[in-house]
Length: 128
Image (cartoon, rainbow, N blue to C red; front, side, top):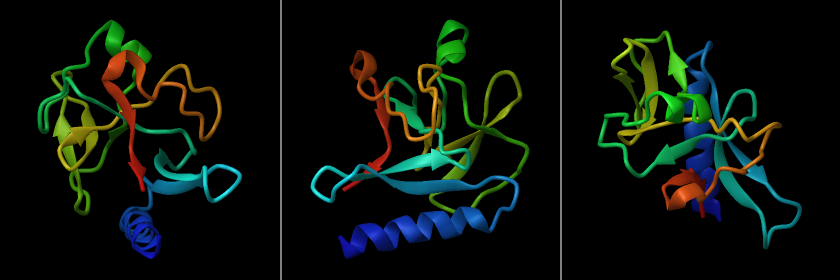
């Protein structure tokens, strides 16, 4: 548990260096046995990865992108393990370890995880 919290703190501090874009690791759940640490945007909205994406390459376009909006930024660089990829539209999308990050349109409030496991290819970023 100490390693998880240290990693969570490192991720949070990494993004607090960048004032306009803060990605956080949040603990969700009501008890320690069922709680989990997940990656969220500064709004508290959960972030997801897509198994179909390549390393540093998004394969979510059109209708997919309407349901799974990309986490975009105006920044040109971020601290590791985060990076920025350029989408075909020219938008800059934030990635974690080469995996582009997305929101899910079906999440209506902070810490919702309604998209986790959808189609067997969408996943929250959790730390255990």
